[in-house]
Image (tube, rainbow, N blue to C red; front, top):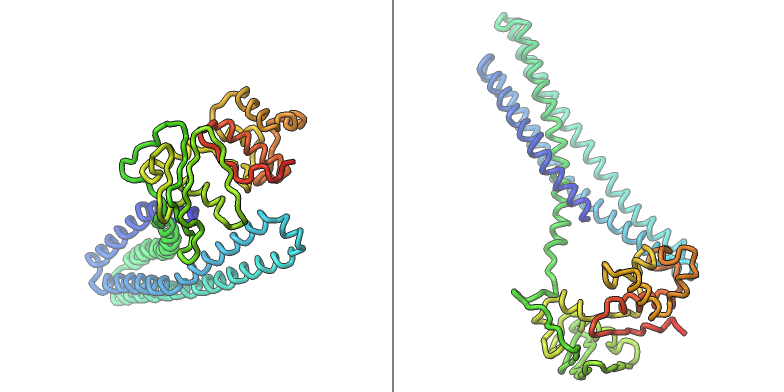
Length: 387
């Protein structure tokens, strides 16, 4: 979506400046020459042809733009389904649903194919209509020029001159029709991109919000309530306090809101009611960057970048030394495993860390958080895959 939108902006700016404006100037000059050196009918037929050509192009292009929208939507759906099935390939294979995923992707491509055929058919109709209009205007003007030559009003040179002017005019005019179609398609692509940019952010920093003041790292929830969906509350009047240097475990059944507490602490969401504080500071009144710098987390679902083990550990603190990285790995009890690998810390982990076991990924995530060295640590079932 964004890629098509940026390409549309580039096309629109370049062709508006270097193609459309020069073509309009050329149309005016040719019409002026025909009016001055021949008669008003030459200019009238030429201008009428241009007006008819432009009107036909605008009407038909506006009519067929709906097929472009359907193409974009079908293309996005096909890409989403392909990426989703590839990222979850283990689940697909485990349940033997390769044929099912193939069918989903094939149906999405079939929708794209239908929209693409309609778009191309309507484009052919547009091209034929444009050709008929230009051909009719050309024949009419050349007919008048030939009649003038037969009556002795014009010379053969005048006839050739008119033909040359018209060719010089209609060639860029035909290109102008192509540019207009592309501009409309670009506007459609840009519309989707700008629509994405206009989606409001649910969590925003207050104007001139200060950074979180460094402190011992005391965390408190004061009568906090929260719901992802108003119809289903997750937290209701939760209150607790975690003094600096203490460890508190939150235990409960699945769906009780344990992971939600960490999301609220990182301010991925704002609380529905109540207040979350760090060292007495309301999280909604400080900048998100400073808040997240003060907290380290090892999530339940560990996701690694498709890079090396060393890169994923260094992600906790960019610019750290080799010794600091290895020290964090030792504390996470993964250094010996990495040292046994042929490429050591330069070993690639694959998409989302698929080349590592669940426990190895969790140890990398622990090392990454240790390297960050924040005053507050969150462990969301961080050792569920470890002995």
